[in-house]
Amino acid sequence: MSEAGKMWGGRFAGELDPFFAKFQKSLPIDRVLVFADLETNRAWASALGRASVLQPHDVTKVHAAIDDLATHVRAHGVPDDDDAEDVHSYVERELGKRCGDLAKRIHTGRSRNDQVATDLRIHLRDVGSELLAATVAVLANLVHQADQHAAAPMPGYTHMQRAQPITIGHWALAHVEALARDHARIKDALARMDVCPLGSGALAGTPLAVDREQLATALGFRSASQNSLDATAARDHACELLFAATMAMTNLSRMCEDLVFFASTEARFGRFGDRVSTGSSLMPQKRNPDAAELVRGNCGLVLGGLVALLTTMKGLPLAYNRDLQEDKSALLPALQRTIDCLRVAALAVDDFAFDTDRCAKEADRGFQNATDLADLLVSHGVAFRDAHELVGKAVDRAQVLGCELQDLPAAEQRRLLPQLHLDLSQALAANVILARRDVLGGTAPRRVREQVARWQQLVLAANRPATETHRR
Ligand code: ARG
Image (tube, rainbow, N blue to C red; front, top):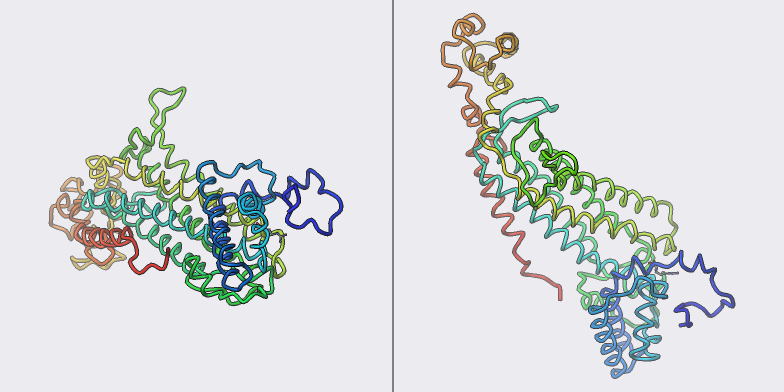
């Protein structure tokens, strides 16, 4: 390597333009791959030993240098203003200080193209595990809320208009369903990513006698890639993981929007605690739901990363092109932001205290029992269309009188709903209405409790470390 840390100086007499030299560096963003790059170097040095390119004692020396550099980086990190062009040049130079020319020899039969493709997959595997764990934390806290409030009534909405009562637990488990699909999507993406490109060379495969399956196993991958052009050029695994993250952010933003509304002065269904709320610098009365708003607001940045990455990929010819260096600046901050947002969302869910008295009271207001009144008429022989009409008129009248359907004066009830000779305040109470939705997936407390139990098992299982792991 030249003094300036270049890996490719041979045919170049002049220096890079200083502005371009800085512009084309990726170290500030790819230095997070340093531990993955050290692992790749370790496995490749072993493979070179087995292919008789390096002597066994040389392999030992390289491994010792890698250990030493790993210790150094753990203590001091990789400076983002280092001269090296990228993390691979940094590692080669630093290994050179520790094992001399051997650092140059380990680049035999290898390219930064298969190296960066391998490093990125190794790194994303770790990021993916963090994403999964952070998702499970939100799930666990939602399931806990559902457990606490499995039978507690609250208003349910469509079009932001009061529609029918639901239980708070049913609301919480709705977001559990969505986030659990995100969890499954992340797992799927990680499974497809579990393929090792090392040994693909720059594009055509390495000429050395390396056992690529053995390399894959040594690096903790399920298998080795089957086509060197694809292995060095593909980034759809990165797009897929980022899509899964974007979808999770989109789902989180909807959950957060619900919570912001619940905490609003208009709804007052609950409030965020001090751990996730902030005040106003001007208005002393404010308790703002900033945690939920920030998660909702970060969705755009993550989606932006996905669009940037897909756009970079579009139309790229095979195989490696330098455009691919930009994959990491779109991908890595977006994934980190998703992890951070999941952590904040877990806190926000945990710190939200429902006002169950108010929720229950409001579940009885706003004619949310109108559908059930129509159902009652149907059970007394009225056709549903006619029942719909009768109840519509009753709602109109109740609105004029300033009361709810269940509070219509007896004379009004006789006039408007002559078919019904029963106490509406009992027949239309929220708990009665809830109990009627006793169908798979319905909001009846009995069903919600069943679902809580199912999710408690699933969250427990997701928290258990996998037993048949092929990881180191
Ligand atoms: N830093 C580059 C990247 O992240 C890897 C270097 C490959 N460079 C090259 N000219 N082939 O994609």
